[in-house]
Every structure is written in structure tokens, then in C-alpha cells.
Length: 347
Image (cartoon, rainbow, N blue to C red; front, side):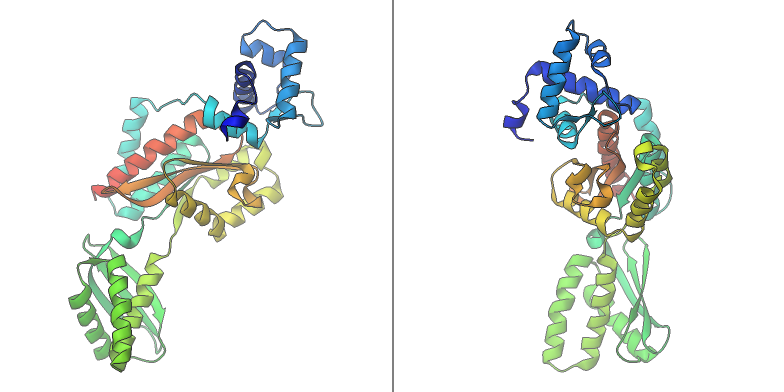
């Protein structure tokens, strides 16, 4: 929202817009001039209030549904609200302590990530989504290969934290058990103790060298390692509370729900938004069509990155209707990101 747009309405009109949006978020019904005047706490004539609402509608901040004399916020109206008018409601200390407990249980990083998605869903009564931590921070301790069939090999990556990452890869030919054992020993010896990004760079470099020296077995070993790492590096996320979205009238139409749940299942659109958020700084808010996806045009997505050792390793967020309580959801997303980073660091 540019400063020019914000300055296009005076302070009184901004106050009325804030009151209208807060009322609409709470009730989900178009807000009439009489209700707005009462909630705004100003001694103004109904005609004056109507004129202010007409000005806001002409500027595109509110709209009038055909079935009502009242008005509802538009995406530009919500954007001005969250950028300049909102009064955030931080979580109470008791809520923060309870959140810490929910993220402090036993288990690996995936268990903590799942707990974070459930926490977001429980606190907001919407859908909570958490990107699985970037595997670049995972240090590989050991690599093993196990033949499953003639052209399928199970790759086992053991991390320095004791996690076991299993991936099945397709090979161009059959390998003897002795060849797979040799490959595992070689890669463990030469690449053990490195994170996936470092390991990938060295594997690709040495794969080129192996090709030039015509060492076919060596090249195949490195290709298998490269395939396993690429599969492991793919982003993913976990989600909780999708069915909560059925409780919102604006999302409860069967066709809309089907589109939303398909997007959640196929993941590409949501992952793209999370990737965009990961490249940005701090909390990101996508309102309606701002996401760039028709499926999410009646939704808002609020995201925040989470860090381990001062390095951003993932993004989490909340998906709900544009009529969401931004003043409460934004602090929930922010504090959950901080708590998740701390929980992962302590593993």
C-alpha cells in the first residue's frame, strides 16, 4: 500500500474503515451506516456517515453487496487495515507457556513440525501449515545402499542427530551387493560430516571428474548419491485443521472447498507461497487475489519464517478466510515461528 493511497482518505475516514472491518470480521455481515456511527463513537449525522462510506467505496476500500445496504471490506481495504490501522493483540503469557509445552515433547524434527501445525490450527481455528525444515542444515553421518530389485535401490542417509532418511531410487542397471557396499563406504568416507548443500556441490563436481576419467562405477555411485540428495531436498509441508475452514460461510460452498482441498493435496500452490515467504523478510500477508492463485482468492495466508542457529530453515503460516482476526492471528504466527525455531535447535 503506497503512502499516496493511504493519504487519499483522511484520519476520520480511516477510523471508520477500521471500525467497519473490525465489525465485519466479528459478525460476518455487511455493516450499515447506523451501526457504524454507533461503533465509531462519533456524534455525526447519518448523512455524514453515508458520505464517508460513499467516499471509501469510490476509492475501492469497501463494497456494497447487492443484497444489503451495508458495506463489506475489499482486498485494498484489508490491505490498508493490516498495513496501517490494525491494533495487534499479543498472546498472553499463559498461552505462550502452553505453546512451549506443546512444542517441547519428545521426537524428531518432523514430530515438532506436526505439533506446530496443530498448535496454529488450535489457536486460530483455521488451517495451520508448516514447511518441513530445509534439509541443508542436516549433517550426513553415514550413507548406505540396499538393493530392492534389479533397478531399485534403497538409499539410507543417517544424520548426525540419529535421523534415518530413506529414499528409493531407480538405477539404469543392476548393481551387485558388493558394489553397493563399496559405494556406501566410499561416500561415507569422503562426504560424511557435511550438510546436504555442501555434499551436493562436491558430489556434482566429483561426478564430472569421474566421467572424464571414465571410471564408470565411480560415476554411478555419485549419480545415486546425487539422486538421493535431490529427492531429500524437495520441500514439503504438513497441515492441520483443514476442516476448520468448513465453519466459515464464505468458504463452505462445496465447489470452493473441493478446490481448496485439492490445492492442499497437490501442494504446488501452497509451496510456492511458502517459498516466496522464505525469500522475503519477516511476516508476509497474502490477502485474497494477492496470492496469485484463483483457488485462494477468498482466503488470506499469513506466514513467518523460522530459524535455527540464525539461519532460516522453513516457513509456517495460517490459511483462513479474508475475514480473519488479523489482530490475533499475526501475533500467533509470529510467536509460533520463534518457538518452533527454538524447539528445533534444542533437538
